[in-house]
Image (tube, helix red, strand yellow):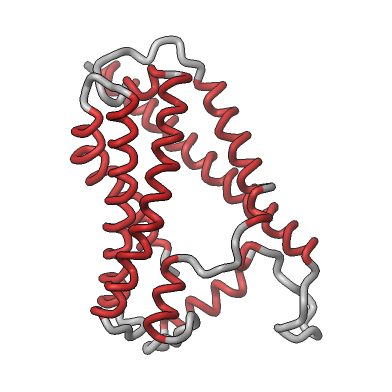
Length: 243
């Protein structure tokens, strides 16, 4: 139900704010380990802060639920500052690792240096392996504690299950989503209507559901990225041929 907001928050701020105005300026054209570390870390913090504030505004203007703006924003920003610091450090670690292993990948975005003989097949295989390990195995150890948004909502309203203040279309869409969702809540849909909703589910079933959800989600994401990349490459090739 919040897919559009998530796409905007996760896509717009990193690509149109953090990268052109922060990362590129801090990293510069002559790259170094310190400049890359600072650029990636600062960008990670800024993106999380902007995304958190955007969530507050989207919640306010949506009218779906009523949360006091002042309290909500004062809880959202500090908790996402802490998350942003960790996220920035993790991002900088990945950027530095890639820069040391294949500097042409990082250099291509900061200078006119050619990419060279980089094997995109190896890169793609690496992404697939990372997706399988992360989505298929590491997902078992995901924390059951609330994330930054859930924690902020609980502290603001006293509950993390908010009732919407509007019915009608939103309720119909929510009901439709529950019926057609293939992997609701990162698990399997139960076809046994005789069991109560609160009936316990074995840990093995939960872990298997997380694995399948992670693998399916990772596969769809990589497939979409590959299709978009192929379309952009085809478009660039055609435009070059016309010239």
